Image (tube, rainbow, N blue to C red):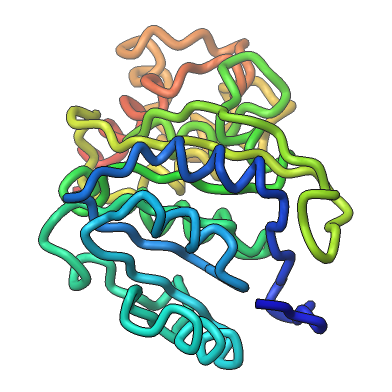
Length: 265
């Protein structure tokens, strides 16, 4: 399938590198019983490779109506095409079995999509694994460790419920049209056991407040969130008030979130 006019408004950069396509499909380790969800199949280059792995079923979510018709013409009943926005679909309704998700996500919504999935109540029952393409800069923030410049809100939110592994960096030349930035493929697997938080929005709030004060010592954001209780909380959680936000482990942020929920419930 040839596309001569990719739509910039939809962030379309079609993956055309056959070697990278094969790597992505192989990472999925698809079996004949697996249900696959492909986000943004575009011209169907990855779809063909996934089909060669003979999964039980493939759902493909494509926002571009023109591309949906072309995909339908080529694949007919081999895949189930959903003409919709990935931010609006209800993944739980697609399958009673966990999904393997492949996605060359539009870079302008990639973090929104990831956070949407992180917030799922039954993440590990809805999804088996994700093989996702991100802008390299965003991927570095997702996999970043404590005490590094890229460590922040996205690293903490992701590590709460997911295990992440970097697979490979991808050159702009692997796409048509070539984007201005490098990309990275990540393998993301839901955790079976994770720290219990009542509402993910509270963790988002905590991390937003802290990393908006990234250069400040922890005393300031703690005071903003916990007010008169900040000294008591810091002692209970053994937090050094002269540390900076990037010095705290994800676990400390989860514990802070729990304390916040206890105080506000």
